[in-house]
Image (tube, rainbow, N blue to C red; front, side):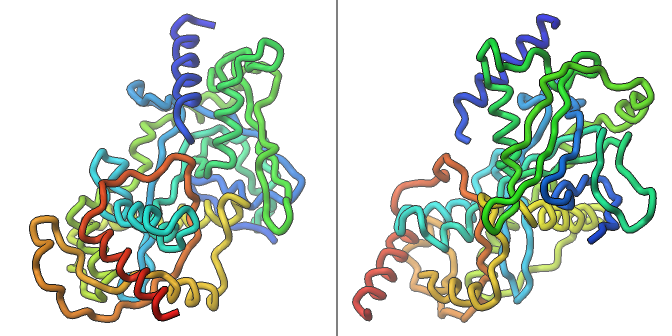
Length: 352
């Protein structure tokens, strides 16, 4: 193993140690691992990011929010991915701080975290509608949540001489294949049994053209940066029931956004118990009514002294139980908005 590869693996181990952290007709870029039947496995070879400056080497994090705006559910990129402060994350933090870890509103506004990586498909057990269809030999995007990524990080972080990986997993000549194992735990599907193969293998020469063609800068798989101003406008429309100006994005950008929303939906479909299934309609309404948000206009810090604007009832958000990572959300100290939440909670206790 080359010195550069060893240094690369050592850096990843340090990052993972310190950071908390029927048939199908799908034939697009994303490999639908959630369509594997129970108690079966798919085998893939994870590939390295073409961008040498990616500190995560083989994956990128995708952060998104879901908001109900004018009775339509929208998936929106979180600007934290681009190093900016996110107003939706800030609101989530305020609810968690006021209500605790079980805050339904905190969960609703918290960002969904997924991981995107490229992989060569070596064994594909999925039953497709078209006879003879298979993803074997193709490079696909894996859109996974923390359950599978935790197993990957655990294996890479392992330094036990007897059980540690003996090669860089994504090395094309001497690497480890990754086995996605789908089982069931209670009422939910489970992937915690997924692991790297202990055997070191080279990628077959017949697949090398596909590997070279499928190698990409992973940052190009992330959704467009909507900007803080757009997120603020969407949040205000969600809270107050107002209108949002039509986006002036190009047709290409709109297409990418639509594709990103579909990928997010399907990747969440069967990840459990960490990723919960979408609640039934009655639960959605009940959870939305219990949320202590009083529809109000979000004000900037320099406008905190203005008189409250007349409230306009907004559509109740469809509460989706998003995955909450181990690390606490970012946020500031108590401000006018947090004080408002506390007042509302106190009023509700008094009425009870």
